[in-house]
Image (tube, rainbow, N blue to C red; front, side, top):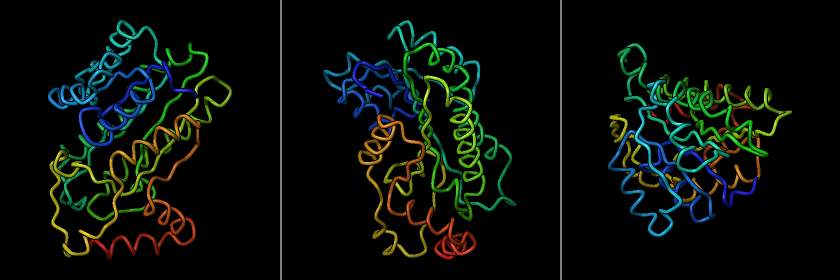
Length: 263
């Protein structure tokens, strides 16, 4: 799908990968509706857009609230007159706590934002997307959606649910004008831990500092390239590619490797 002059809805547009998605799409001459719960972050994204801000609209929305999400299509259509794409990028992680000790309020918050938020957006925007000559949905899952991470079990479950939702949607829409891509990023250097209220101290700080993480800019480029090429599945980062291979080859070994790293 050519992105020039297309209207793309991006969630999490107030920081991290989402902000870089917005800025990169604007550089590629798309029009963007940026969604986030953080109004100040959205305003900073608008400032960073500079002259390209004329093609950007910002919308403060709590993705866990269906009634707020369902108002979005009308708001976006009033400004941009059409919607051609949706990138479900927003997400949070859980505190690094085992399931036995994790409060239901946090479990529900993670599932609401990481799974129900994308589901609400898909259900809200899909009728409009189906009206376009060509349209696309890109769902950002996670490496944690196919390999278990101790202390992030609910986060992983939410991203695994999004993975299956995305892949099932691809099958349901294969004979329509709407394509679907699922992205599985590995480690990305963002503030997701701080923003999610999930502080974690690595056991070995020297090893942690040597971890090669994708930059948000590089992650955004990979996601947008995948959307443009209408790919089915994208593994973003060497860690994601390696663990995807190892999980298919020997899932227990992959799980044990992650568990040992975080022990």
